[in-house]
Image (cartoon, rainbow, N blue to C red):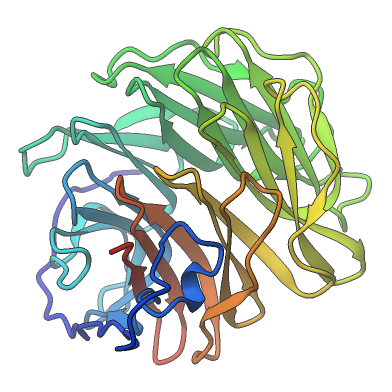
Length: 400
């Protein structure tokens, strides 16, 4: 398939967010468990990011090294020309205004599953799937992106990928493939900041050949040789139920455990590493049909074993959890409950969690909630609403 780099101009209808602040003083400690409910802190009202003749989906969000610097990559579809694209937008003022989309690629066939990661120097890395797995890199201070690099091709079908940059600026990527018989492989590779020398891909789900593809992939690394991966997969003999699996490497990703750990019936997950080096795992687990709750696990021995689960929510329709750990070691979590996006946090390393706060619930459909935090602990949210067309919705909460 031929891919074309390019950009399309468009007018943008930006709604500037207004921060809601109680004029009464006090209670504004951003490190408190009642962060959302305190007088001086709240999420902004919803900002819509919408362009004519464009239908966004699957947005992902990352912060850059400069304060106020935000980057979005998403799927895009041009209804007036029947063209698919992977689009990039950025903001330099904490999301008050956004650039017009730049299309990193355009195609007559669907481009999907974008991922983004940014290192401490400002290198921007993007991966996506369009018949093959592609990787792009933009260097700091440059406006042009490098030519897309093919990381995976052949008879197998790549489905999804995810990117992560560790504290030492090493790039980590996983992607899933299925062969013509529907057997699963989940590959891992890494590269230095030049992104030109990738390690040989390793199948880190070698014991799961009879499973369907790996979805909801998540990677984390502490920069000290410990690399972790988690994903959801469905056994081909019981495809109604998915399971969460994890695997780990203690030599920087050169070798992985031969067997991975299973976390009951679940539909989605996320992992992160805290300030003590512990691995945190969130899973949307189901014990009754169509009833999901958000469950928290922690590993203090580098992924070898996990704590007993802590239920962040009880049985409901809770799914798609995301976790980001800020510079003050707060665990910040969002997840979707039907057409609501909810937020909670822990300020004591996962022992207790704040009351659930509904961030946004004014839309008939909410999808693809993603979160990023900057070095000062400011929280940024991006998600998709199909109310009034496929529109990106943005919110933030400052720690002032």
